[in-house]
Image (tube, rainbow over all chains, first blue to last red; front, top):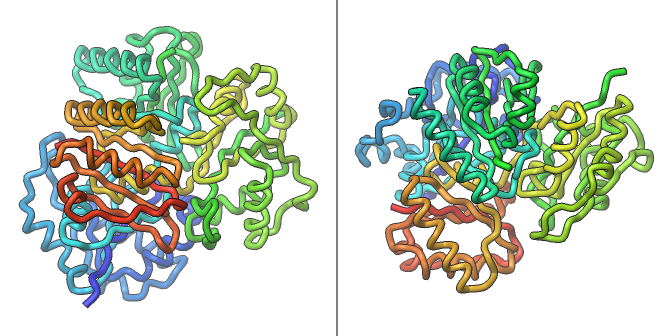
Length: 252
Length: 252
């Protein structure tokens, strides 16, 4: 019997915001693929159902929403290493071992990138289940492209420490690394701490370092601004506290 | 008068391969936006016309293909730093300063990411031209998602040196960095050197380091395999020499 595949299905980037038309950010082929899948492993069951309801308005689902098997990923505590036993991952992959494709879905963007799901993908490789990632929006890459900073060498480093002193030290380390390698450094923050992170960047970083901020990417209100730290200090902006943002820096 | 915007238009990932249906990888909203644009700055005019011809088969262009203004980006020699004068970038942005949106397009994937275009985006920010990046496929992020390696911290480092000794040294540096930071390292290679790069990785890296290879992403022949170096050595694969590949490594 042929095994099913693990299909990484991208979500929109409007989680927590007003819904954007799916066809603005997701290819029709992705909607078709999502509508065919009967087995799902997801970051959050409620938001997955909401996503599939939006899909069904464009492409009829192969099975009724109520008939789909939707299972949530185990949730390790934030920052802690994953201690989910291997058997639990194999259990989640059971439908694929029985020949059915499984969709993996997070709450926003590509699963397993700055989002849960990588451990399930690893388990799929270990079990001989083929993995297919479908094209969709990534706030990280959209922010990098829109920044105009170095796209030939870049790193995403996730969240910075919350403690002000630790955060400043981390920013200095990232700036030194960026200068040495010519590498753009990308980071994200919980929206209500957006202003605090930008404030720290403008305090800590060198005046000539370039900082790019992208807010609400793919939303109607989306904006990207890139300037030197000196330029940002001269022309400050108000950071929204409920909209996700991506921050990039490139040292001169 | 309102300025136009610089709109980063994603391309498909089938450059040089058999054409895939656009709707597999590009959102309808992107096709609609591309069909409206009269001014383009592109990596290659011929492939841009071919892209717009494919778009026109799905969405009628607002103007005939022959009437579009399609200008190529200046080409700095590979590896050399860009010496295009600022005036040349402003010249390319002229339509936006006169109120028209400009599309920026590369031959594959997102412009300005592992591709030319970033300098034009920087010039747009410097000229007060708003930048909007549209969602589309990125082989780097699809490869990272499909690898199951760490997606919370990752770096793209571009091409490795061609000289075997330099390449081995670079791989050792990247492996050490990956081990220290827990950071997935992504790299690409010219397709005919795919086999040489994989061979070098399997020779140089530690047996427990995990290596993921994604070939021909979004093509019907696409595959991703992730295993330890030891596992790859035990079960070697034939690397295609005409299909783009993305290589990821994560040290144990």
